[in-house]
Length: 274
Figure 1 (cartoon, rainbow, N blue to C red):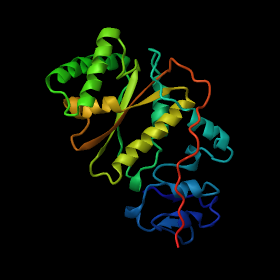
Figure 2 (figure 1 turned 135 degrees about the vertical axis):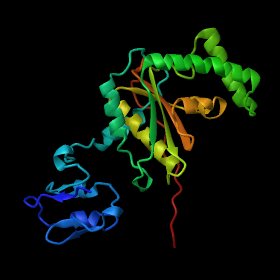
Figure 3 (figure 1 turned 180 degrees about the vertical axis):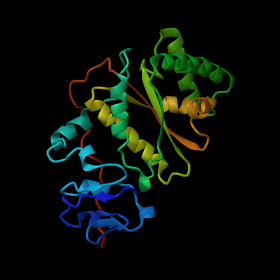
């Protein structure tokens, strides 16, 4: 478990024990874990310690970022959320690998049910690979719509239109010219896999906005890979026992939005319990 306490810094305040979800930290002379097998690996003990005395799982306070004065102000956060847009026009130049890694590593801090950390990320960040993948998808999608279209007529008509626009006009509805995309999946055994995948992509998207990287939630591409050309899942290395979440395009945007939009007040039903 590698739980350690800097005795020179520890003031025996007990906050680590009080905040431990499973109650496995006890104060003797100094804090200690009494049942390592039940550790949630949440690192709350490291985060809550006011003096930075606790290290756990190979992580120390020196490796962490102090929070005081670092969170965005509420108006800034509101502008970020309200100003976020779905980007459907991208520049061909790729995002630098180190920036992609920073984006992924930051989004990896998104919460998961029971702290399972079971979301898998399938990333295609090489623009040449994306182009080859896109060419194959469009070619095979057109054949699939001619030979074995989906049972729902509206879905078949939608994908026929997408193929036609690409073939006749070069209008790329599925990939929007994005140089990168990722897919999330999670094992069917994961306790809250659908929520976990959605939360990860939400964190990914908001962080991308702060880095001036455009994103697009892509349900169309997910539908193609999941049900129309399902062999692509295996070729992408997505395990057979995984549920496929959403696809997300990302890259340097070729469009710049100038202001937030307004959606009005939230639809809320307030209840009282007697």
